[in-house]
Length: 342
Image (cartoon, rainbow, N blue to C red; front, side):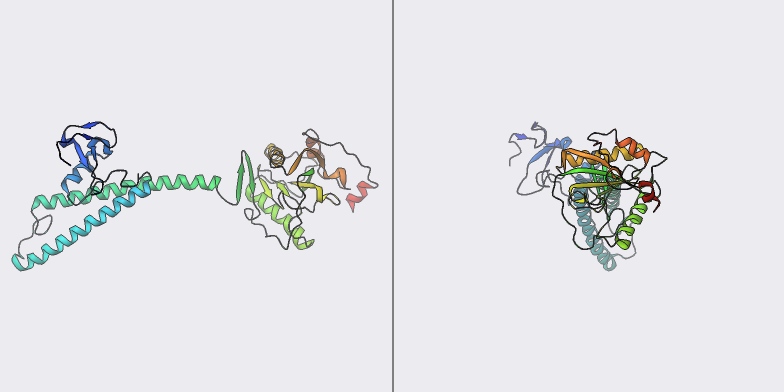
């Protein structure tokens, strides 16, 4: 292309008037021009391009519109390696030549190179090392932040739905299911609330431990294929997945095929569950309706209303009676307290 031809900057689309302010893509198939200021290169980087003719500048189009630090770093590292190889070959050739011609003389900076060339080589190397170091810091920071985001949102063992956090069986280090579980005919019409003694937990570590204790009792003592509850609610505000939405539980006799069993970790006869756990349970039930696992007019029941137990304890039982869809089902159980003693 003639230098007298009117040129338009590739980035800002302005007219390039002064050739000293232009830079041309080194790709032979491109050769598009750009204002030096539009390259987003620093003055030091532009000086390096002038000093080292072997270094190449390519436009964003030829670089496939590089936008990530990792791609830019890879490109810079490749250019640096190519430049270092050229320097090594040049120095090696000059050293061999020096041994034959004048082995006694050694310039102070770069052997058998004029001082100006040696200074340029050192300057270029220092600039590239500095740029690589700075890019490494940026990439490390970006990778760390990106890793934290992934851990919060894309961990296959942790499912986040709004403020609802559901930990899978693998996430709380439970045993895998043995055999095949019976599927539920969804949506179901009941949610049955119970509790799992003995202690209320308030951290993920302790809640995971009591979930494993409960699972061991169900699977090893009762020989069930999996923990009997569909979900467990921790005092830390997390939901610990059991059989989940899709499989029949083993929590309430004669009601497992038409209900979701949710058990709070702890005993609540004299103490209230944490506010976090109550909110998590309500979010879980709302999710079940939204996912069409529960009927919109589901019945919310306490385990004690259906079977001869005192679960959930008085404090938790009092609270769930204030929730939506509470169903006031009352049954008279003979010798109820005697059953508890047995």
